[in-house]
Amino acid sequence: MNAKRLRAYTGAAVLLLLAATLLMAAGCGGGSKDITGVYKLEAGEDFTVTLTLKEGGNATYSLTEGAGLPVTYKVEGDTVTLVGADGQTIPAATFTIVDEGLKDPTGNLYEKQ
Image 1 (cartoon, rainbow, N blue to C red):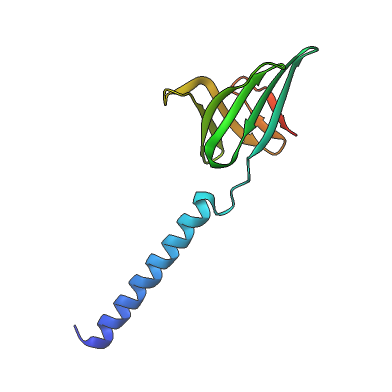
Image 2: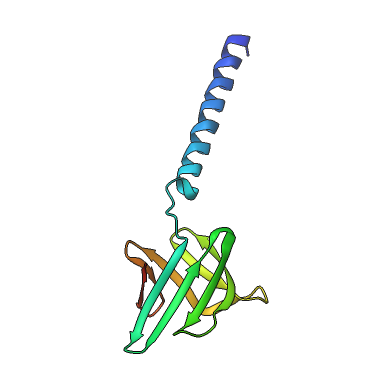
């Protein structure tokens, strides 16, 4: 293989690698939404659930006006999952990110405040 052909193959490989990297970056958070903030679910006349997502993956989950349960969260694609102090995913605490806020597995909407 001559030097000219080798440079052409090398240049094509570099361009393919660059294109693949850019596509992965666009799909892995390049257009992700800022999900930090306060989300509320009005579950009844006198019952409110509040989920506060903070920077760095920390969160607080509160029922009505009581003290909040400190948790952490992780985001994967359009899913937010709450994780307890023991490092385990909290059952039924997986939310789907939607335009209005977060939806839990039963379809309840936690509206972003």
